[in-house]
Length: 411
Ligand SMILES: Cc1ncc(COP(=O)(O)O)c(C=O)c1O
Image 1 (cartoon, rainbow, N blue to C red):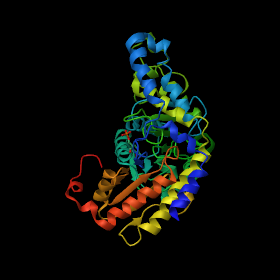
Image 2 (cartoon, rainbow, N blue to C red):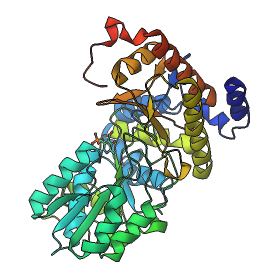
Image 3 (cartoon, rainbow, N blue to C red):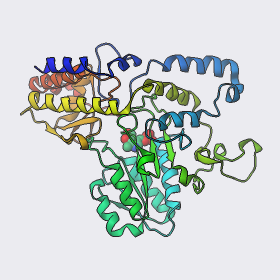
Image 4 (cartoon, rainbow, N blue to C red):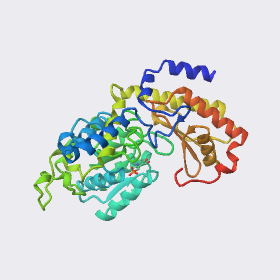
């Protein structure tokens, strides 16, 4: 029954052909694209060319001849197409943590006199650490308010809030929040909305311009599949660019970088959000990876993603019942990102045993099994196989074998 359903859903999948744009290992079910996206088929040749021809032969001339200088803006615009940002508002480069620091500090500088910075107590750790650091630097109080309560706090105390810094998707449970509503609540209070799109960019439609978002950041290595440590991106809404007081005043953001002036003068538009020399090989890999989205409609990605996560929940309901699993992801599609999580006291050994069988997900302490569904390459048959293997492991106790006890550094 579930086998037939999976086959029928895959047969009717309008994105089925996109899977061939990725080089997936034979026999592996990859449900960790929310951590490190799979390798897009376009990437190896581009990296090879970047290394041998551009670096090896063209050498320093590549900055002009091969468009290296423009790569952060070019790649930023390519990301912008996936997150509803018109050209000229996104730059790619550096890490999410760096871009977070930069844009959050710059956002807070745009609201002087306000003493609060709101962020989520369940936000990814780096976001909380950086919010605290920005708070210390600017003398702001960082108040941790859960996303679902933030609008109420903004309505009550919003006059004190400089920036509300949130993520549309909870990185552990996959719960999806209403970006438009929270952005509107921040604006109604005169505050700015800052978004971390790590688990949203490339995973679901994001409409930064349409909802009036102020700042956003995100990483290149999850649903954008840009590779390990791929450059991040920063969105600075056009209306804030003239006032964007760049905290990390690196020379690439200067108005005339090659004038070699000893005094900083910010560049025009989003160029002032650039920092220093980007990691070009990684940036070119990310740019190539983004071609996997060519001709792909994000509304279609969303439909398939919901079908995959919904089918996962359906399979889990019928195959994992009374095996100690508790669903952690909302059933309501409107409240679900592109991942599904289950709680189980033996989460780590279960995930390790699954991985040993070629079904790759991950775990987040203390008890969460996390499965990410990249609609560009995951199939409903993958989903069913993952749940069937999980059932087999839980029923047989295969995860209690000694090799699954030891936790490596990265879980
Ligand atoms: C929401 C969120 N923000 C930030 C990061 C990571 O930041 P960085 O790319 O600097 O390691 C992650 C990584 O998983 C994340 O999930």
